[in-house]
Image (cartoon, rainbow, N blue to C red; front, side, top):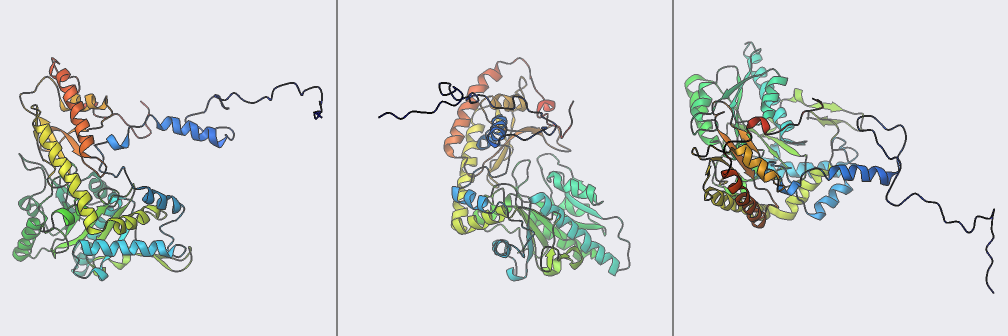
Length: 467
């Protein structure tokens, strides 16, 4: 017999009332103010997800040095550690232990005389690591001057004009005179002679760059160290070196083992690198190492007890994620020396091949070829006057490629270039696709009567400023 359904209020014959499938409440969402009330989590997710579709494709971003691909296992470990605070070493002792292991691994990689005595820490990136290194240079110089009974109110730092902007920030924030060696002719970075010329009794150190952001080239660290050794013999000035190895410190040990740039040079006091660049970790992770514990003044180390237990801390940031440190340790275990060598070799091979093929297209000439850091810069030949590197960059962006165009710093602001950074995940196949699109846009550019874009069109982002 058939079951009878009750009819409450005569409503059993009506359909269920639900929101339409393709519409959600609220219909409008404020952009620059908190919404008045809560929102369904699925709706909030969809709003944010849809906005992010307007971002560029990270894998096609040839401007950034930062890692844009990671193995699923690394991403899983990072998700599992998302809540872990790197500063809280009492609560997360094993995360702290893995950080320490990474420091020791890097110390051996960079030929520290006694890796067990190296002082080092993770940071949020090379910018923070550079700030810490600069602070140590300044503090050690100040202590030395005080011991000599001499004034310590006019510190200066010698570096090439090609340094990353974090060094300019350090000089400004911490009141150190930046003595920047300008570019000259075909010299695009610091030279030994120019470095020594600018050193005096107030010089806290010389910054050398292993992998210039402008063209990927290595600065001659050993030659600069030798010139400073000679300066000390002649004048008594003892000027330490910091190596900004944001990129190259994770390239040279694997591909250029005979290049002497690291702690094998007694004058190198400290080194930084970016774990999130050629360390192959997602952003943001950096590393700062000092030759030994004596190189890190005690008065820069603070001790806190309000997280449980006495805890030393040396960093500009306090709370910061531990997930990237875990991913770094995973990569060190996963790849080992030979795995890193193979990854970096592939990057350099792609860079060298791509640079050669771009040079063969006709309108371009190379500044560098990717033979040091897997990064190369190229410019238009002088006879090309009807389009600019900024036109080339804009044309490639139409196909999804972000290839930055920019001018060099003083005294070569006349030089405008394009730069390509080859990272893990940018394969020979992707390089071929880029070349196809470059060949596609060149005929149109050649047909232009005059340039359409210059350096003012290179970018338009402003931090919180609405114009």
